Amino acid sequence: MIEKDTNGAGPCKDIETADLFEQNLAPEVYHDLTEVRRDVVTDLSFCEIEFIEEECSRCGTRIPGLMINGDPPKSLQEFKIMLHNVYEPFYGNPRSVEYVDMDTRLAESSPEATIEIFKSVMFAAALGSEDAENETGKRSKQALWTQILGPEYTDDD
Image 1 (cartoon, rainbow, N blue to C red):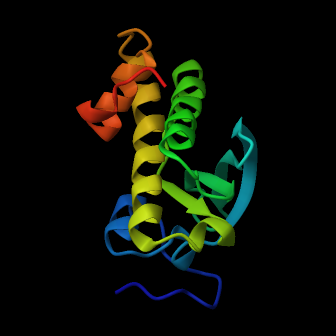
Image 2 (image 1 turned 45 degrees about the vertical axis):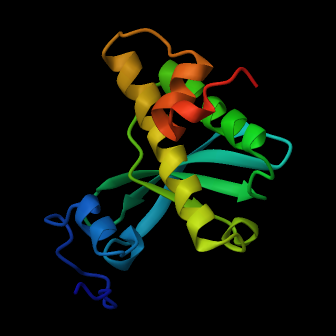
Protein backbone atom coordinates (compact mmCIF):
# COMPACT_ATOMS: atom_id res chain seq x y z
CA MET A 1 0.00 0.00 0.00
CA ILE A 2 1.20 3.52 -0.81
CA GLU A 3 1.44 5.88 2.12
CA LYS A 4 1.31 9.65 1.90
CA ASP A 5 4.71 11.28 1.83
CA THR A 6 4.63 13.84 4.63
CA ASN A 7 8.02 15.47 4.06
CA GLY A 8 7.08 16.99 0.69
CA ALA A 9 9.71 15.18 -1.37
CA GLY A 10 8.36 12.04 -2.94
CA PRO A 11 9.14 10.01 -6.03
CA CYS A 12 5.69 10.26 -7.56
CA LYS A 13 6.64 10.17 -11.27
CA ASP A 14 6.33 6.39 -11.54
CA ILE A 15 2.79 6.05 -10.19
CA GLU A 16 -0.18 5.76 -12.52
CA THR A 17 -3.43 7.39 -11.44
CA ALA A 18 -5.31 4.32 -12.69
CA ASP A 19 -3.27 2.18 -10.26
CA LEU A 20 -4.29 4.48 -7.41
CA PHE A 21 -7.94 4.17 -8.46
CA GLU A 22 -7.73 0.36 -8.53
CA GLN A 23 -6.29 0.43 -5.00
CA ASN A 24 -9.09 2.79 -3.86
CA LEU A 25 -6.58 5.57 -3.19
CA ALA A 26 -7.22 9.16 -4.16
CA PRO A 27 -4.43 10.84 -6.18
CA GLU A 28 -3.79 13.31 -3.35
CA VAL A 29 -2.58 10.39 -1.19
CA TYR A 30 0.55 10.22 -3.34
CA HIS A 31 0.75 13.55 -5.20
CA ASP A 32 0.90 17.09 -3.79
CA LEU A 33 -1.96 18.47 -5.89
CA THR A 34 -2.93 22.05 -6.65
CA GLU A 35 -5.95 22.96 -8.74
CA VAL A 36 -4.93 24.55 -12.05
CA ARG A 37 -8.25 24.54 -13.93
CA ARG A 38 -11.98 24.43 -13.18
CA ASP A 39 -14.73 24.64 -15.79
CA VAL A 40 -18.48 24.07 -15.45
CA VAL A 41 -19.54 21.10 -17.59
CA THR A 42 -23.24 21.35 -16.82
CA ASP A 43 -25.41 23.29 -14.39
CA LEU A 44 -28.65 21.45 -13.70
CA SER A 45 -31.43 22.43 -11.29
CA PHE A 46 -30.30 19.78 -8.79
CA CYS A 47 -26.52 19.77 -9.28
CA GLU A 48 -23.53 21.27 -11.05
CA ILE A 49 -20.78 19.18 -12.62
CA GLU A 50 -17.33 20.71 -13.05
CA PHE A 51 -14.21 19.58 -14.88
CA ILE A 52 -11.21 19.98 -12.58
CA GLU A 53 -7.56 19.59 -13.44
CA GLU A 54 -4.97 19.36 -10.69
CA GLU A 55 -1.18 19.34 -10.96
CA CYS A 56 1.40 17.80 -8.65
CA SER A 57 3.94 20.35 -7.41
CA ARG A 58 6.61 17.63 -7.15
CA CYS A 59 6.40 15.75 -10.43
CA GLY A 60 4.16 17.90 -12.66
CA THR A 61 1.58 15.14 -13.28
CA ARG A 62 -1.81 16.56 -14.26
CA ILE A 63 -4.88 14.70 -13.09
CA PRO A 64 -8.22 15.56 -14.71
CA GLY A 65 -11.50 14.78 -12.98
CA LEU A 66 -15.12 15.69 -12.50
CA MET A 67 -16.70 17.18 -9.38
CA ILE A 68 -20.42 16.77 -8.77
CA ASN A 69 -21.80 19.50 -6.49
CA GLY A 70 -25.36 19.29 -5.27
CA ASP A 71 -28.02 16.67 -4.88
CA PRO A 72 -28.27 13.33 -6.66
CA PRO A 73 -30.87 13.01 -9.41
CA LYS A 74 -34.29 12.29 -7.92
CA SER A 75 -35.67 10.48 -10.93
CA LEU A 76 -34.55 8.43 -13.89
CA GLN A 77 -35.39 11.40 -16.12
CA GLU A 78 -33.03 13.68 -14.16
CA PHE A 79 -30.31 11.00 -14.31
CA LYS A 80 -30.70 10.68 -18.08
CA ILE A 81 -30.53 14.48 -18.50
CA MET A 82 -27.38 14.53 -16.36
CA LEU A 83 -25.70 11.91 -18.56
CA HIS A 84 -26.62 13.68 -21.78
CA ASN A 85 -25.45 17.02 -20.38
CA VAL A 86 -22.06 15.48 -19.58
CA TYR A 87 -21.74 13.70 -22.95
CA GLU A 88 -22.42 16.84 -25.04
CA PRO A 89 -19.57 19.08 -23.73
CA PHE A 90 -17.08 16.20 -23.87
CA TYR A 91 -18.08 15.60 -27.48
CA GLY A 92 -17.47 19.30 -28.15
CA ASN A 93 -14.20 19.40 -26.19
CA PRO A 94 -12.66 15.92 -25.86
CA ARG A 95 -10.48 15.31 -22.78
CA SER A 96 -9.78 12.52 -20.35
CA VAL A 97 -11.29 12.07 -16.91
CA GLU A 98 -9.48 9.94 -14.36
CA TYR A 99 -11.81 10.32 -11.39
CA VAL A 100 -15.21 11.57 -10.25
CA ASP A 101 -15.65 13.26 -6.88
CA MET A 102 -18.69 14.64 -5.08
CA ASP A 103 -19.77 16.94 -2.31
CA THR A 104 -21.40 15.65 0.86
CA ARG A 105 -25.01 15.90 -0.34
CA LEU A 106 -24.38 13.31 -3.02
CA ALA A 107 -22.41 11.19 -0.54
CA GLU A 108 -25.59 10.82 1.52
CA SER A 109 -27.07 8.64 -1.25
CA SER A 110 -26.90 4.89 -0.94
CA PRO A 111 -23.47 3.45 -1.83
CA GLU A 112 -24.99 1.60 -4.81
CA ALA A 113 -26.57 4.79 -6.19
CA THR A 114 -23.35 6.75 -5.68
CA ILE A 115 -21.29 4.12 -7.51
CA GLU A 116 -23.79 4.02 -10.39
CA ILE A 117 -23.74 7.83 -10.70
CA PHE A 118 -19.91 7.92 -10.66
CA LYS A 119 -19.57 5.11 -13.17
CA SER A 120 -22.22 6.47 -15.52
CA VAL A 121 -21.00 10.09 -15.46
CA MET A 122 -17.43 8.97 -16.14
CA PHE A 123 -18.65 6.71 -18.97
CA ALA A 124 -20.71 9.56 -20.51
CA ALA A 125 -17.63 11.81 -20.53
CA ALA A 126 -15.49 9.05 -22.04
CA LEU A 127 -18.06 8.30 -24.76
CA GLY A 128 -18.33 11.98 -25.69
CA SER A 129 -14.55 12.31 -26.01
CA GLU A 130 -14.18 9.00 -27.84
CA ASP A 131 -16.96 9.77 -30.34
CA ALA A 132 -15.43 13.18 -31.13
CA GLU A 133 -11.88 11.84 -31.46
CA ASN A 134 -13.02 8.95 -33.68
CA GLU A 135 -15.25 11.29 -35.71
CA THR A 136 -18.14 8.81 -35.44
CA GLY A 137 -20.80 11.48 -35.07
CA LYS A 138 -22.76 12.54 -32.03
CA ARG A 139 -24.94 9.87 -30.44
CA SER A 140 -28.66 10.43 -30.04
CA LYS A 141 -29.98 10.60 -26.51
CA GLN A 142 -31.52 7.17 -26.95
CA ALA A 143 -28.24 5.64 -28.20
CA LEU A 144 -26.36 7.22 -25.30
CA TRP A 145 -28.83 5.95 -22.70
CA THR A 146 -28.81 2.48 -24.27
CA GLN A 147 -25.01 2.36 -24.17
CA ILE A 148 -24.77 3.50 -20.55
CA LEU A 149 -27.98 2.26 -18.91
CA GLY A 150 -29.12 -0.60 -21.14
CA PRO A 151 -31.80 -1.10 -23.80
CA GLU A 152 -34.72 -0.85 -21.36
CA TYR A 153 -34.02 2.90 -21.00
CA THR A 154 -34.23 3.97 -24.66
CA ASP A 155 -37.59 5.73 -24.53
CA ASP A 156 -37.88 9.36 -25.61
CA ASP A 157 -38.19 11.04 -22.22
